[in-house]
Length: 220
Length: 189
Image (cartoon, rainbow over all chains, first blue to last red; front, side):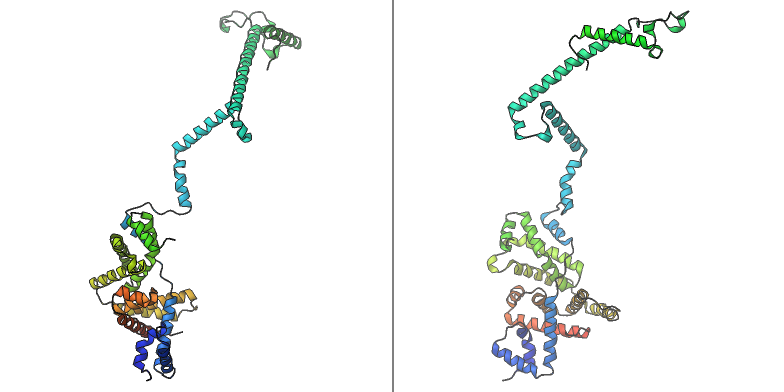
């Protein structure tokens, strides 16, 4: 028995969704092919269903997920992505006290390294060997000590020269209290008044003093 | 990616990230269902939030044996939408028609032919406008089947009505929607 228009309308969606049996589908298509009323309806509904299936879901508002999570899990820290996450990790580093601490640590490391004679640029596994660290430290301490000794000796020489060159530099009366300038003394004159012969003479004196105080040593 | 039932188990043990994952995975589906049913973005947002609050409180009552988590979530959403509809029942039909018609005329008189995305957006808006003129029973059936992509059995589970009723509602909803869209000037391709 052929289908009526009412039957076609009733089973239209089942036809579109492939729920009709083969027999039913044949009856359905036979009726629609020859019915001026049903053909446009089937085309219309079929077109609509096809286009609705092709519709993309609407995007939810961006704050919706956080709103839901806030209402269920309680308020949380705002979601961070990419740079924000990286910067949040970096934030404590930018605090002044942290920066101060970091600088202090670096300075200490530098001092300890240089004291141990370890050059960070040329550091190898061998430089971390306790024996070589001790050897290096020992060498550095001796080096520093001998430099100190030499420095003190040099100071002594300089001081001695100064005192020998100005034996009369002892306290003098103020210039206005002197009735007349004292007789010129070559060793008391300022340098620009000194003559070439006197300069050579002075150098000889200095050399003699140095050799007396520091025999065999050298001025550095 | 962990399956939903496993995430639910983790949530029940107090795992916050598992809940977050579950929410992120399903927010769009819930929001779309709410938006298509109410036709209002703000209402859809509030309702989606309410749905997840209810889910969060009743998560222990979900049994994977009863069916998929998505179907369960859809049932909860649908029940909430029906409650909401009963609470705020009012006649929006005339408003929707008045809203839709001038926009259609504007589109037709536009100098430049709209691109595919704009056409799809236009279609989405027209479908929305026509949906709001359907009765809630037909509207929910068409939304679940054609916009949410549920099959007949899932729609039956969500609506909790006999199979024949589901078939009939989907069919009548589609035919009525097609007629409404034709009146609004949308021609079949």
